[in-house]
Length: 459
Image 1 (cartoon, rainbow, N blue to C red):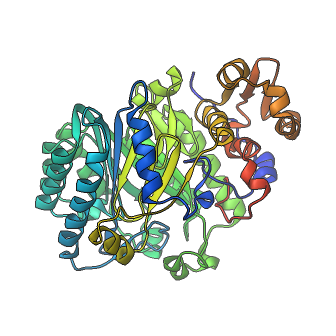
Image 2: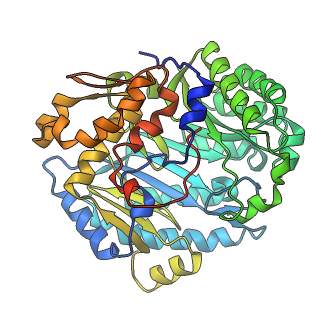
């Protein structure tokens, strides 16, 4: 069923605190340097020897951008020197050569995603070279879902044709806002016409699904100006939409220091923009997936949610539930078996490790049984807004009400606020609570009791 939303400003103000986005559990702050190359190899070996080894997803991080977007909190390298990508491809080739022999050769890549940075910083020839490297080292499924993040300013129609010719069938376009004053304030100026034309070319080339990213809370945004952006977005009708909350953390992210705090919308304006966006997208026929994500009815993400197979990973929601996530490139994060591992975020360290014959893994975590249990609970809630006690009890040989007695007690305040419903069969997140799903999941995060980490606000 479509996830209908009920927007209650008072409740959102009450629960609007900082919290994880749960692209993993345990979350990245729990990763430690005790997990390195040796531990990753063990995880891969164990995953190869499962009764039915999982297929693979592959994430490739391209860190380069030739201009800086002031709101950005991603791991990136700002440079006009496009020769750097040639050396980086050599490093990726080295990493692929080291990783691929560790996996059973029959394990196919079912999903591929290029993120960044700006993946289209690579030239067309380099993109073709990268795909050849991947296909030389891994078996890529004939119907592989291949997606790439696109900066409309940095890609031509010819490049879009090249991308589709080498197999890319899904694209994500960064839009953020169409208001020119907002764009100038964040150093990302791109016209509606430019985005429209790129979208048109992508569809003409047979791209199956197009996602667009929007951000609310940027300088000079008002409900009125963002409403005009929504008019254009609804006219373009992308298959999926990601609506992100801008978190102003200039003490952590240097580019944000170029944004004047006094130019940001007030909390009241930001909440009004958020409410407007939720209401207009639902009226336009978009289904709320959860955690800021919408998709048109009929999209594979909606189908996965309806069938109970939707998952979350480091790229957000994923329709490929049963895969191990292999990750290459500086700062990339993998999920193999019951482990997470992250490459060095420092380019020099990443290069030195590879050149010394080592995988560039510098931290990670091996999940304990309790981590795996809580990961499943959080994933079910954040993807499907419901949890069946019996299924969890049978799989984990526990009595849910006893094992999670503290958590169920903590949820009573949300029950009183009509955010969740709890009975003998399980937990159901109600329409009033779906926008606050992160708060519900945080109750089951045992690390939050002992860790003080600065996360973004839940709304």
